[in-house]
Amino acid sequence: MIDLYYVPLPLIFLCGVALIWGVSEIGWRLGRRGDGHSTNIGTLESATVGLLALIIGFTFAMALSRFEARRDAVVQEANAIGTTALRARLLPEPHRAESLKLLREYVKVRIDAFQSGHSFADLKTAVERSNAVQEALWKQARAVGEQDKALVPTGLFIQSLNQMIDTQGVRLAALRNRIPSIVLVMLYVLAAAAGGFVGYASAIDSRLTRLPVLIMGLLISLVLYLIIDLDRPNNGFITNNQQAMLDVAESIKGFAD
Image (cartoon, rainbow, N blue to C red; front, side):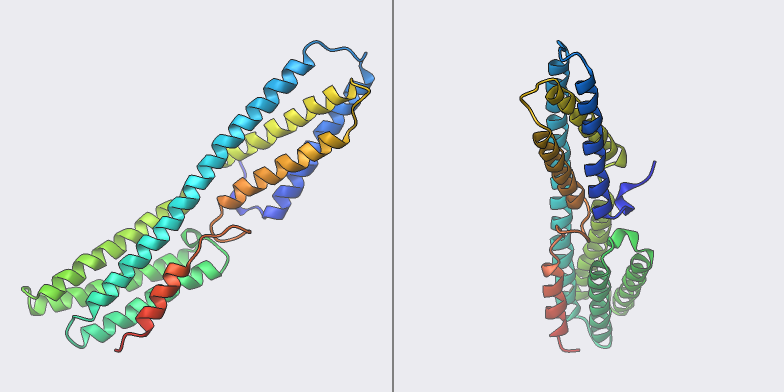
């Protein structure tokens, strides 16, 4: 099955609207061709619309919880990097200057990856560069530790560095934890079915017009668009705020080498 995560949002929205409107039009035409009497269509219409509303609610909750987890992961990582930078200032030279230089590069990699418009978890080069910087920082910590194993600042630096490395794993896991595409596809299928039943029910009642059906299809498509947008942290209208990382980058820049 195609991964909807890599399909442009405007294309998903337009295809969703076309699908729901198209099926509702088919339902309308079938209703016009019928005898104007149906004892079951009202029940099917209510059941389908109710089920659609229920699943949309659950899916929206899934997207929102994932969005909040990604936002919290950014703050946790920024705090871990800031703590590591503060403790790096306690290291003896030349490890102090080299560690701060590496931390500045580390933050820059994270910010540049976000500004590229793609999820950090999908940028293999950025992840590999982050891992390389982590390894270089670990070598600095090991070199200082070998000079004096009883040095308290070194132990504090190693502790915060280990936490910083762990937060990268947490953030990557949060970025990769997306709503399965099969759930989104089923939402659109159910929305189309609901549009078809509503269109059919509207056709068999001469007092009703197609306009409410079209409005309903547009509103459902907008809600589904919002759900998918929430599930994409680096593009779309709703993105994770990177201000915490920007603040850390600015504070580290002010540390004298």
